[in-house]
Length: 498
Ligand code: BG6
Image (cartoon, rainbow, N blue to C red; front, side, top):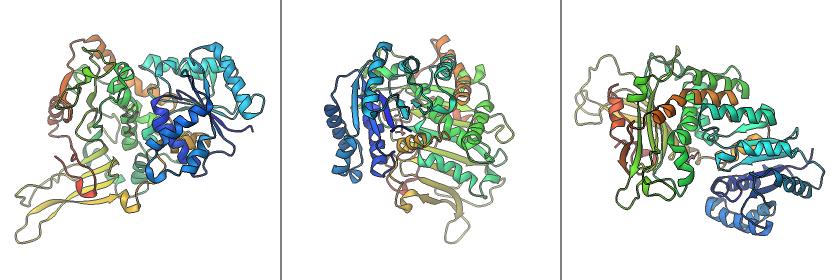
């Protein structure tokens, strides 16, 4: 086989410098990249190889954790980088790419290629066709495509058709970096490597589930991208629904790419189709407004002053199957929230009868299991115990596991894990074509509803708050409320709620 070359489209963009290069450096440092590898950056910005190496070296200093930075290794890594100025939208320019690949590999028609599309989504459909026209869809070639894969159901179908006309499904890796997170994968281990929770993991014992992935930052200068995307396409249709799948899926008989992904698709296909009532009452969308020193979304660069793009969304969804019938899953995501946190909170049913007293707050209600994906990664089980002393009062306490107790999370981040899996040809943690369509099929009515109802509410929420009050009201119907973690999540004592 020829030497391995990874080709990154969007090489001068944000994702490349923040995530991809630090991840590739991590792999390099661990000796986890193929022998004699090269990385070829592609972009319209005009750079020489040397300039690109210097630029990336600089960015590695910014985005690789200080403890991981080894000067010599960073410089050695950058010596494997090349850059080709090229407009990926122009079919005529792909000849340059072919020539460059041959020059780098020293071989004719190298085929051990991995294309990574870190470009604006508008190019996802164009690049594969140009690669095909240039004869670059070779047997050992793979392609990684960023999310969102498609803009709605129809465009996702069209994209799938384009990819299927260029590559075989086993060559296509639709990335969703949440699945690369150690803590997301651990949901499977927690559920299926332990006997004690699984018998309780169903409608008989679980009252409702919350899934939260919120951030305390705004759109970070990505106005142009975000205006056309919004929270539903950016986070919900992919990251959040993946977490729903990990929480709700049946155990695969054997853990491999096909079996695991079959179970994911089954969850998506069981999502209860959204009714008119759901669309009106069980979805709350919001947009952050200025607060203190924080600008409102409409004041951000690249955002229209009358923008209706949502930066927050909360939804109640149901799963129509034996395990989950009647158990609501409340999911939410938002920018400019009080803190950054991703977690799943499983609320078990209350005891049938309360016979103990509880005074002075911190009263146990139902047991609650928190799977914290980030930060302060860990698992907490909240339960009631007798308050020491006379009488028979009970209080809520917790048992907790924190990754810190293992010496922290292993260095490899989500992107490193996924790129390494792709190089090894393991597609387990990537989204299959049927999954992407099944997910869009479920969310498409929301987009259509918003499009057809220009007056559908879009609530403002001051930057730095937990979103529109209406999202609380949505849960009260079930006698439930959101679990809002403390603002300063720094140690395990802080599994507290506001
Ligand atoms: C990305 C979204 O996919 O995920 C961003 O495009 C978001 O808007 C990011 O900030 C969140 O990822 P993480 O790993 O930082 O939680």
